[in-house]
Image 1 (cartoon, rainbow, N blue to C red):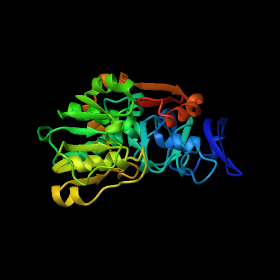
Image 2 (cartoon, helix red, strand yellow):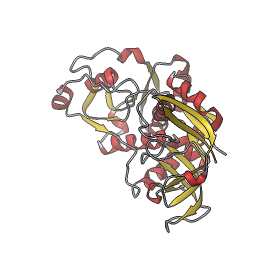
Image 3 (cartoon, rainbow, N blue to C red):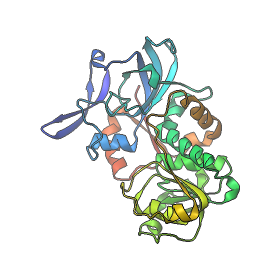
Length: 325
């Protein structure tokens, strides 16, 4: 099978497309013929070596994929069934989706929802799945459309752009934050009512600022998240799922103890398999047909290394879809 293989020799990382014997696939009870995968920020960190994502080599990256069951020993699945996978450490500590086949635990697979095809599932991918979890976190925190604006940071990325589309479909008034002026029209087309520049949030905030946001979805961390916490309405909820800037959070307890706000962490890797189909069903129901045409860059497996470098350099908008076969 054809695969993107990461190797490390004498602390030097190499990433290349190679032919790999399927007999070398790791243990698992379901083998999947992969048709589509994606290139996420975490994949780009792994492929370029910019982040310590991979700790065992050789490794096939790719934290999600969709395809067709080739062989199964798990009675929940049958040969020829369309399935998808996101998370579970695949592409980090278990060979992942940037290959023509994967062998995984059936516990990690989700049947493809009715109404979605394999390509659409990967346009959504891990990023969209995470965005839906963030929206659910706001709903569970009591954030309603009538409460006021919801702000989304890192809006040009996969999580941010999908979150804007989902919130807009649910009737929320969405404000996007982006450092890329050239993407403003795109973000408005997704459903944002306005776009604010990244630099407005780049300085450390005061402990409390004017209350502006009913809720927020943050993918960035650092001063942006700290500023949003200081500006969130009484009883508001902020869902944090990323650290695109860095892992720092220079805040105080003031927004929490004086404004009763909630900072909800969102993690998508180990969401129990029983909960996943309902999340995917909501994605299928909420995302409009136009979403699948908006700012999706389709590449081949051979282009994955090139686009990983572009992603790290902030030169890619929206989602990067990988056609595997």
